[in-house]
Length: 97
Image 1 (cartoon, rainbow, N blue to C red):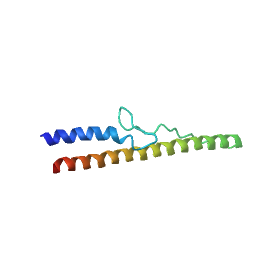
Image 2 (cartoon, rainbow, N blue to C red):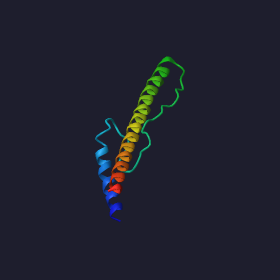
Image 3 (tube, rainbow, N blue to C red):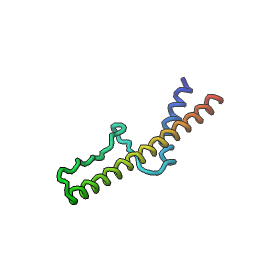
Image 4 (tube, one colour):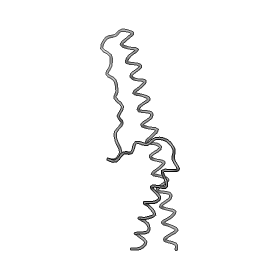
């Protein structure tokens, strides 16, 4: 039972400590992992240069939003992996002792 409590405590501290290792944004919030907030623009109805240019500009903004979401998701994956690695090392050390 003491080992389980120790592992839980080590995990708690490893999660908070692991955030220091990865720099960059995150998508995590208090309610879990959110869906992207990127809004895909509607295809233009009028086939004139202005409508097409406006649509292309909005698609560029949409693509940047999606890329930022993906980049932040990769950062979150690294944070999770760091926490896993740390708790595994600490648990193995504790179990050996």
